[in-house]
Length: 152
Image (cartoon, rainbow, N blue to C red; front, side, top):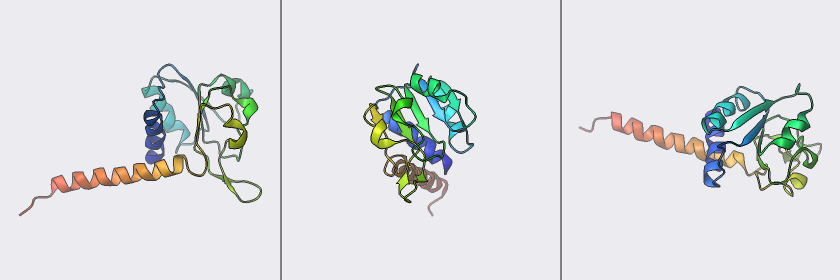
């Protein structure tokens, strides 16, 4: 399933004509499911990639310089407006519950959206793209399977 997350994120970049070539991409989170695989995806698109995590010192120095931030850190509303520059592209992969039990992302959407050129909401952003990419994979697999069968 984690590949669908990655394909969903890359598909969003393609759909909105967000070119990663030469861009400074900061990935928040180093999980084997999202953070680490995204490094390779972004490098293949010629981005300059920095991975940050819970032990990164002076995190704000990295996020303020980022053209694109992909957050998968797992902390509700962790990324705030004082941590980003104007025009930044934000992809929020995080799924968390706030103190009221409401579903929220890693990004303080309400405040960060004012500075971002593009931002994904939670819910409604990467999640539906993940489902779409899963369905895309099912269709591809079905087509491949049908090619292998001989009709008598």
